[in-house]
Image (tube, rainbow, N blue to C red; front, side):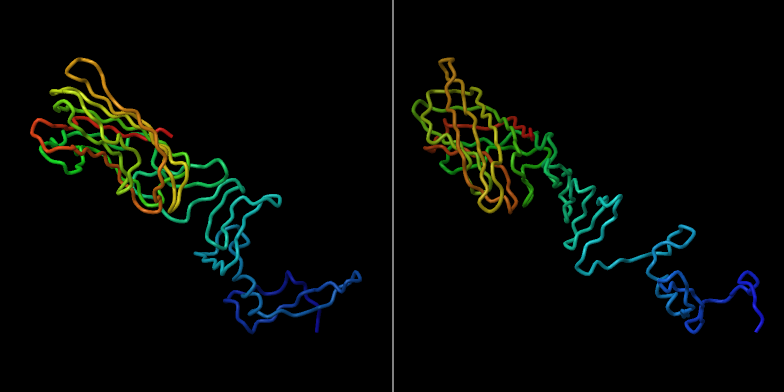
Length: 285
């Protein structure tokens, strides 16, 4: 059989068949080569694993099944993009994305140690726009927060350690001398802070306010919240009277938590009245 140059061979114009045979030269390890054959089926199997064609274009839509292992794109041996076996995406070994979406209005924040999480932005969370109902002639503990814009609820697992909030609520109060009232700051059923039972001096349609700061010091089912603040009101005598509170309480951050401020009169009198006209909550850190 006469010799023929490879360049003179007829180009294959039809699709590659599994039964096609191709000659390859394999190194014999001693500076020479040994002729071997490869089938069309073997070439198809190799090519099928390639994401890119020889011209650099992507070989159609590709699905990669990690099947319990990780996938990493590297530059000079360093991970640039990595998808772990547990589906966590990380960049440059610097930070990792959460594996679930946050709630409406949340943003991604970093803890400075390579972990990103969805959380409430450091901005206004709630602003009361409607005066609360007047609490009077009852000894039932009742919310004194009026309706407004925004939300007082933090979603389950929505806290990170260090989250801090500032709240201020105020309105009008009336009470007879030596009547009592209790103000409570709550997350669900958990009392974060309270004035305890306050004995009031005579006050008639005078201003009151309660200013509060909260900081999350631990998260989880036994998380903790540090709360400090004060309740104050103007007496009929013209001077200011009040109470400063400081407390650390355990609360569950794995469930949704709604902030509530309540009042409870120690006696049921029509002369004892309290309502709020303004309440603002914002995240400070």
